[in-house]
Image 1: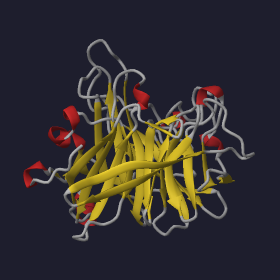
Image 2: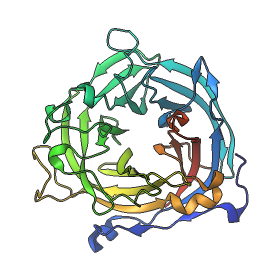
Image 3: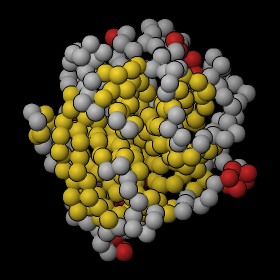
Length: 370
Protein backbone atom coordinates (compact mmCIF):
# COMPACT_ATOMS: atom_id res chain seq x y z
CA UNK A 1 0.00 0.00 0.00
CA UNK A 2 1.46 3.36 -0.95
CA UNK A 3 2.46 5.86 1.68
CA UNK A 4 0.04 8.61 2.69
CA UNK A 5 2.05 11.76 2.11
CA UNK A 6 -0.68 14.39 2.01
CA UNK A 7 -1.79 16.05 5.22
CA UNK A 8 -5.46 15.51 4.40
CA UNK A 9 -4.85 11.74 4.34
CA UNK A 10 -3.80 11.75 7.99
CA UNK A 11 -6.59 11.12 10.48
CA UNK A 12 -6.31 12.16 14.10
CA UNK A 13 -7.93 9.95 16.74
CA UNK A 14 -9.85 12.03 19.25
CA UNK A 15 -9.27 11.40 22.94
CA UNK A 16 -12.57 10.30 24.49
CA UNK A 17 -13.49 9.22 27.99
CA UNK A 18 -15.25 5.95 28.84
CA UNK A 19 -18.12 5.98 31.28
CA UNK A 20 -15.83 4.53 33.94
CA UNK A 21 -13.53 7.56 33.90
CA UNK A 22 -13.86 10.28 36.54
CA UNK A 23 -12.71 13.87 36.91
CA UNK A 24 -9.82 12.57 39.01
CA UNK A 25 -8.93 10.20 36.20
CA UNK A 26 -8.95 13.10 33.76
CA UNK A 27 -6.29 14.79 35.84
CA UNK A 28 -4.17 11.64 35.88
CA UNK A 29 -4.00 11.38 32.11
CA UNK A 30 -2.13 13.72 29.85
CA UNK A 31 -4.02 14.41 26.64
CA UNK A 32 -2.61 12.35 23.81
CA UNK A 33 -3.68 11.91 20.24
CA UNK A 34 -3.00 9.13 17.78
CA UNK A 35 -2.55 9.99 14.13
CA UNK A 36 -2.90 7.62 11.18
CA UNK A 37 0.16 7.67 8.92
CA UNK A 38 0.01 4.70 6.54
CA UNK A 39 -1.06 1.14 5.80
CA UNK A 40 0.90 -1.76 4.31
CA UNK A 41 -0.73 -5.04 3.25
CA UNK A 42 1.31 -8.19 2.66
CA UNK A 43 -0.08 -10.27 -0.23
CA UNK A 44 -2.57 -12.97 0.69
CA UNK A 45 -0.99 -16.41 0.45
CA UNK A 46 2.59 -15.11 0.38
CA UNK A 47 5.08 -17.92 0.94
CA UNK A 48 8.35 -17.79 2.85
CA UNK A 49 10.56 -20.68 3.97
CA UNK A 50 7.99 -23.33 3.03
CA UNK A 51 5.31 -21.55 5.05
CA UNK A 52 2.30 -19.41 4.25
CA UNK A 53 2.65 -16.01 5.87
CA UNK A 54 -0.49 -15.44 7.91
CA UNK A 55 -2.10 -15.66 11.32
CA UNK A 56 0.03 -12.74 12.50
CA UNK A 57 -1.28 -12.34 16.01
CA UNK A 58 1.60 -10.46 17.67
CA UNK A 59 4.33 -7.98 16.71
CA UNK A 60 7.30 -6.47 18.52
CA UNK A 61 10.29 -4.20 17.98
CA UNK A 62 13.50 -3.75 19.96
CA UNK A 63 16.84 -2.23 19.00
CA UNK A 64 16.37 -2.60 15.26
CA UNK A 65 14.76 -6.06 15.43
CA UNK A 66 11.21 -6.66 14.19
CA UNK A 67 9.31 -9.91 14.80
CA UNK A 68 5.77 -11.18 14.25
CA UNK A 69 4.35 -14.42 15.62
CA UNK A 70 2.00 -16.72 13.68
CA UNK A 71 -0.76 -18.64 15.43
CA UNK A 72 -0.62 -21.54 12.96
CA UNK A 73 -1.39 -24.50 15.25
CA UNK A 74 0.26 -26.92 12.83
CA UNK A 75 3.64 -25.16 12.94
CA UNK A 76 4.01 -22.44 15.59
CA UNK A 77 6.63 -19.96 14.40
CA UNK A 78 7.77 -16.40 14.27
CA UNK A 79 9.04 -14.30 11.41
CA UNK A 80 11.71 -11.63 11.35
CA UNK A 81 10.97 -8.49 9.35
CA UNK A 82 12.73 -5.61 7.70
CA UNK A 83 10.50 -2.58 8.24
CA UNK A 84 11.32 0.94 7.09
CA UNK A 85 9.17 4.04 7.51
CA UNK A 86 9.22 7.71 8.39
CA UNK A 87 6.65 10.37 9.21
CA UNK A 88 5.35 10.14 5.62
CA UNK A 89 4.70 6.40 5.74
CA UNK A 90 6.10 2.96 4.96
CA UNK A 91 8.92 2.70 2.42
CA UNK A 92 9.33 -1.10 2.76
CA UNK A 93 8.15 -4.08 4.75
CA UNK A 94 9.42 -7.57 4.00
CA UNK A 95 9.78 -10.97 5.65
CA UNK A 96 13.46 -11.84 6.18
CA UNK A 97 13.39 -15.07 8.21
CA UNK A 98 11.22 -17.75 9.79
CA UNK A 99 11.97 -19.62 13.02
CA UNK A 100 10.01 -22.67 14.19
CA UNK A 101 9.19 -22.73 17.90
CA UNK A 102 10.20 -25.88 19.82
CA UNK A 103 8.86 -27.55 22.95
CA UNK A 104 10.85 -28.16 26.14
CA UNK A 105 12.40 -31.31 24.66
CA UNK A 106 13.50 -29.60 21.46
CA UNK A 107 10.74 -31.18 19.37
CA UNK A 108 8.09 -29.69 17.12
CA UNK A 109 4.84 -29.02 18.94
CA UNK A 110 1.96 -31.39 18.28
CA UNK A 111 -0.83 -30.17 16.03
CA UNK A 112 -3.37 -27.99 17.86
CA UNK A 113 -1.46 -28.06 21.14
CA UNK A 114 -0.28 -24.46 20.86
CA UNK A 115 -2.19 -21.29 19.99
CA UNK A 116 0.62 -18.71 19.90
CA UNK A 117 -0.77 -15.22 20.36
CA UNK A 118 1.87 -12.72 21.45
CA UNK A 119 5.64 -12.23 21.36
CA UNK A 120 8.03 -9.75 22.98
CA UNK A 121 11.77 -9.44 22.42
CA UNK A 122 13.67 -9.54 25.70
CA UNK A 123 17.33 -8.90 24.94
CA UNK A 124 18.96 -12.13 23.71
CA UNK A 125 15.72 -14.10 24.03
CA UNK A 126 12.01 -13.57 23.66
CA UNK A 127 8.89 -14.31 25.66
CA UNK A 128 5.71 -15.61 24.06
CA UNK A 129 2.26 -16.78 25.05
CA UNK A 130 -0.10 -19.55 24.02
CA UNK A 131 -3.80 -19.92 24.75
CA UNK A 132 -3.39 -23.69 24.71
CA UNK A 133 -6.43 -25.75 23.81
CA UNK A 134 -8.79 -25.59 26.74
CA UNK A 135 -11.33 -27.97 25.21
CA UNK A 136 -8.62 -30.63 24.90
CA UNK A 137 -7.30 -29.90 28.43
CA UNK A 138 -4.07 -28.41 27.08
CA UNK A 139 -2.91 -25.57 29.30
CA UNK A 140 -2.08 -22.06 28.17
CA UNK A 141 1.44 -20.89 28.90
CA UNK A 142 3.95 -18.06 29.00
CA UNK A 143 7.52 -19.10 28.24
CA UNK A 144 10.85 -17.79 27.08
CA UNK A 145 12.75 -19.13 24.09
CA UNK A 146 16.04 -18.39 22.39
CA UNK A 147 16.09 -16.33 19.23
CA UNK A 148 16.52 -19.69 17.46
CA UNK A 149 13.18 -20.88 18.87
CA UNK A 150 14.58 -23.25 21.52
CA UNK A 151 12.88 -23.56 24.91
CA UNK A 152 14.44 -21.72 27.86
CA UNK A 153 11.90 -21.45 30.65
CA UNK A 154 8.19 -21.82 31.40
CA UNK A 155 6.46 -19.47 33.82
CA UNK A 156 4.54 -21.11 36.67
CA UNK A 157 0.83 -21.37 35.86
CA UNK A 158 -1.67 -20.67 38.66
CA UNK A 159 -4.42 -23.25 38.96
CA UNK A 160 -7.15 -20.77 38.05
CA UNK A 161 -5.64 -20.36 34.55
CA UNK A 162 -5.27 -24.11 33.95
CA UNK A 163 -7.48 -25.95 31.48
CA UNK A 164 -10.55 -27.26 33.25
CA UNK A 165 -13.80 -29.01 32.42
CA UNK A 166 -15.55 -27.31 35.32
CA UNK A 167 -18.61 -25.37 34.26
CA UNK A 168 -18.15 -22.62 36.84
CA UNK A 169 -14.36 -22.19 37.00
CA UNK A 170 -11.34 -21.84 34.74
CA UNK A 171 -10.51 -20.20 31.42
CA UNK A 172 -12.62 -20.27 28.27
CA UNK A 173 -11.54 -21.70 24.94
CA UNK A 174 -9.69 -18.99 22.95
CA UNK A 175 -10.00 -16.59 25.85
CA UNK A 176 -6.73 -16.85 27.75
CA UNK A 177 -3.29 -15.18 27.36
CA UNK A 178 -3.90 -13.11 24.25
CA UNK A 179 -1.92 -10.09 25.46
CA UNK A 180 1.68 -9.93 26.69
CA UNK A 181 4.10 -7.15 27.58
CA UNK A 182 7.47 -6.63 29.17
CA UNK A 183 7.14 -4.55 32.31
CA UNK A 184 8.38 -1.01 31.93
CA UNK A 185 11.38 -1.76 34.19
CA UNK A 186 12.14 -4.99 32.25
CA UNK A 187 12.05 -7.02 35.48
CA UNK A 188 8.89 -8.91 34.66
CA UNK A 189 6.07 -9.59 32.22
CA UNK A 190 2.40 -8.72 32.06
CA UNK A 191 -0.20 -11.03 30.55
CA UNK A 192 -3.84 -10.28 29.89
CA UNK A 193 -6.84 -12.52 29.48
CA UNK A 194 -8.87 -12.10 26.31
CA UNK A 195 -12.10 -13.12 28.05
CA UNK A 196 -13.12 -13.43 31.70
CA UNK A 197 -12.48 -16.56 33.71
CA UNK A 198 -15.72 -18.47 34.19
CA UNK A 199 -15.75 -17.54 37.87
CA UNK A 200 -15.30 -13.86 37.00
CA UNK A 201 -18.39 -13.50 34.82
CA UNK A 202 -19.93 -14.01 31.42
CA UNK A 203 -18.24 -12.83 28.19
CA UNK A 204 -19.29 -9.44 26.82
CA UNK A 205 -22.48 -9.09 24.80
CA UNK A 206 -24.00 -6.08 23.07
CA UNK A 207 -25.76 -5.37 26.38
CA UNK A 208 -22.89 -5.55 28.84
CA UNK A 209 -19.12 -5.65 29.19
CA UNK A 210 -17.06 -7.98 31.39
CA UNK A 211 -14.12 -7.94 33.80
CA UNK A 212 -10.87 -9.64 32.85
CA UNK A 213 -7.52 -9.97 34.62
CA UNK A 214 -4.13 -8.43 33.91
CA UNK A 215 -1.41 -10.40 35.71
CA UNK A 216 2.23 -9.63 36.53
CA UNK A 217 4.92 -12.33 36.30
CA UNK A 218 8.31 -12.11 37.99
CA UNK A 219 11.00 -12.93 35.41
CA UNK A 220 13.41 -14.51 37.88
CA UNK A 221 11.02 -16.74 39.82
CA UNK A 222 8.50 -17.29 37.02
CA UNK A 223 5.71 -16.75 39.52
CA UNK A 224 2.50 -14.80 38.95
CA UNK A 225 2.03 -11.86 41.30
CA UNK A 226 -0.35 -8.91 41.45
CA UNK A 227 -3.40 -8.75 39.22
CA UNK A 228 -5.70 -5.96 38.14
CA UNK A 229 -9.29 -6.10 36.88
CA UNK A 230 -9.89 -4.51 33.48
CA UNK A 231 -13.41 -3.64 32.25
CA UNK A 232 -14.01 -4.89 28.72
CA UNK A 233 -16.43 -2.92 26.56
CA UNK A 234 -19.68 -4.50 25.40
CA UNK A 235 -19.67 -6.03 21.91
CA UNK A 236 -19.74 -3.06 19.54
CA UNK A 237 -22.60 -4.15 17.25
CA UNK A 238 -24.91 -7.12 16.80
CA UNK A 239 -24.25 -9.86 14.27
CA UNK A 240 -26.46 -9.55 11.17
CA UNK A 241 -27.58 -11.33 7.99
CA UNK A 242 -28.44 -14.58 9.73
CA UNK A 243 -25.20 -14.82 11.71
CA UNK A 244 -25.01 -14.97 15.49
CA UNK A 245 -21.29 -14.98 16.32
CA UNK A 246 -20.08 -11.89 18.18
CA UNK A 247 -17.42 -11.17 20.79
CA UNK A 248 -15.19 -8.55 22.34
CA UNK A 249 -11.84 -9.20 23.99
CA UNK A 250 -8.55 -7.67 25.03
CA UNK A 251 -6.06 -8.77 22.38
CA UNK A 252 -2.84 -6.99 23.34
CA UNK A 253 -1.14 -4.99 26.06
CA UNK A 254 1.87 -2.64 26.31
CA UNK A 255 3.16 -1.27 29.62
CA UNK A 256 4.84 2.06 28.84
CA UNK A 257 5.25 3.30 32.43
CA UNK A 258 4.78 1.60 35.78
CA UNK A 259 1.13 0.51 36.00
CA UNK A 260 0.24 2.39 32.81
CA UNK A 261 -0.58 0.58 29.60
CA UNK A 262 -1.83 0.80 26.07
CA UNK A 263 -4.56 -1.80 25.60
CA UNK A 264 -5.93 -3.08 22.30
CA UNK A 265 -9.57 -4.21 22.30
CA UNK A 266 -11.06 -6.02 19.33
CA UNK A 267 -14.77 -6.59 18.91
CA UNK A 268 -16.06 -8.81 16.10
CA UNK A 269 -19.59 -9.37 14.82
CA UNK A 270 -20.37 -11.65 11.90
CA UNK A 271 -22.27 -10.66 8.77
CA UNK A 272 -20.63 -7.33 7.91
CA UNK A 273 -18.91 -6.56 4.60
CA UNK A 274 -16.42 -4.21 6.31
CA UNK A 275 -14.78 -7.11 8.14
CA UNK A 276 -16.99 -6.93 11.21
CA UNK A 277 -14.19 -5.69 13.47
CA UNK A 278 -14.34 -2.74 15.83
CA UNK A 279 -10.84 -2.06 17.19
CA UNK A 280 -9.85 0.49 19.82
CA UNK A 281 -6.67 1.57 21.59
CA UNK A 282 -7.12 2.57 25.22
CA UNK A 283 -4.79 4.36 27.61
CA UNK A 284 -5.00 2.40 30.87
CA UNK A 285 -4.10 3.58 34.38
CA UNK A 286 -3.80 0.91 37.08
CA UNK A 287 -2.11 3.02 39.75
CA UNK A 288 -5.09 3.00 42.11
CA UNK A 289 -6.58 -0.33 41.01
CA UNK A 290 -7.14 -3.12 43.52
CA UNK A 291 -4.77 -6.09 43.50
CA UNK A 292 -7.27 -8.88 42.78
CA UNK A 293 -4.79 -11.78 42.76
CA UNK A 294 -6.25 -13.08 46.02
CA UNK A 295 -9.89 -12.56 45.04
CA UNK A 296 -11.50 -15.79 43.86
CA UNK A 297 -14.26 -14.20 41.80
CA UNK A 298 -14.75 -10.74 40.35
CA UNK A 299 -18.52 -11.14 40.33
CA UNK A 300 -19.93 -8.37 42.53
CA UNK A 301 -16.51 -7.90 44.13
CA UNK A 302 -15.92 -4.58 45.91
CA UNK A 303 -12.86 -3.54 43.91
CA UNK A 304 -11.44 -0.64 41.98
CA UNK A 305 -10.82 -1.59 38.37
CA UNK A 306 -8.21 0.03 36.16
CA UNK A 307 -9.30 3.27 34.53
CA UNK A 308 -9.21 3.48 30.78
CA UNK A 309 -9.48 6.27 28.25
CA UNK A 310 -10.04 5.93 24.53
CA UNK A 311 -7.12 7.01 22.36
CA UNK A 312 -8.24 5.73 18.97
CA UNK A 313 -11.27 4.09 17.41
CA UNK A 314 -10.09 2.49 14.17
CA UNK A 315 -13.51 3.10 12.62
CA UNK A 316 -12.33 6.69 12.08
CA UNK A 317 -9.54 5.36 9.84
CA UNK A 318 -11.70 3.35 7.44
CA UNK A 319 -11.55 5.96 4.60
CA UNK A 320 -7.74 5.56 4.54
CA UNK A 321 -7.71 1.73 4.64
CA UNK A 322 -7.96 -0.92 1.91
CA UNK A 323 -11.64 -1.23 0.93
CA UNK A 324 -12.54 0.49 4.20
CA UNK A 325 -11.61 -2.67 6.09
CA UNK A 326 -10.37 -2.74 9.66
CA UNK A 327 -9.19 -6.32 9.80
CA UNK A 328 -8.65 -8.62 12.76
CA UNK A 329 -6.02 -6.46 14.48
CA UNK A 330 -4.35 -8.37 17.31
CA UNK A 331 -0.78 -7.06 17.65
CA UNK A 332 0.67 -3.72 18.71
CA UNK A 333 4.16 -2.41 19.40
CA UNK A 334 6.09 0.80 19.69
CA UNK A 335 8.58 1.22 16.87
CA UNK A 336 11.50 3.64 16.57
CA UNK A 337 10.66 7.27 17.29
CA UNK A 338 9.93 9.57 14.39
CA UNK A 339 12.37 12.35 13.54
CA UNK A 340 10.14 14.81 15.41
CA UNK A 341 10.62 12.80 18.61
CA UNK A 342 7.11 11.36 18.73
CA UNK A 343 6.57 7.65 19.28
CA UNK A 344 5.57 5.42 16.39
CA UNK A 345 3.07 2.60 16.83
CA UNK A 346 2.62 -0.35 14.46
CA UNK A 347 -0.35 -2.72 14.64
CA UNK A 348 -0.85 -5.96 12.72
CA UNK A 349 -3.87 -8.09 11.85
CA UNK A 350 -4.34 -11.84 12.07
CA UNK A 351 -5.88 -12.85 8.74
CA UNK A 352 -6.86 -16.32 10.02
CA UNK A 353 -5.18 -17.61 6.83
CA UNK A 354 -8.36 -16.46 5.02
CA UNK A 355 -9.99 -19.77 5.97
CA UNK A 356 -13.59 -18.56 5.83
CA UNK A 357 -13.30 -15.46 3.65
CA UNK A 358 -10.56 -13.23 2.29
CA UNK A 359 -8.79 -11.26 5.00
CA UNK A 360 -5.74 -9.01 5.12
CA UNK A 361 -2.21 -9.22 6.51
CA UNK A 362 -2.65 -5.58 7.46
CA UNK A 363 0.03 -3.38 9.06
CA UNK A 364 -1.00 0.11 10.18
CA UNK A 365 1.46 2.86 11.14
CA UNK A 366 0.41 5.44 13.74
CA UNK A 367 1.98 8.42 15.47
CA UNK A 368 1.47 9.01 19.19
CA UNK A 369 1.48 12.73 19.95
CA UNK A 370 1.64 13.81 23.59
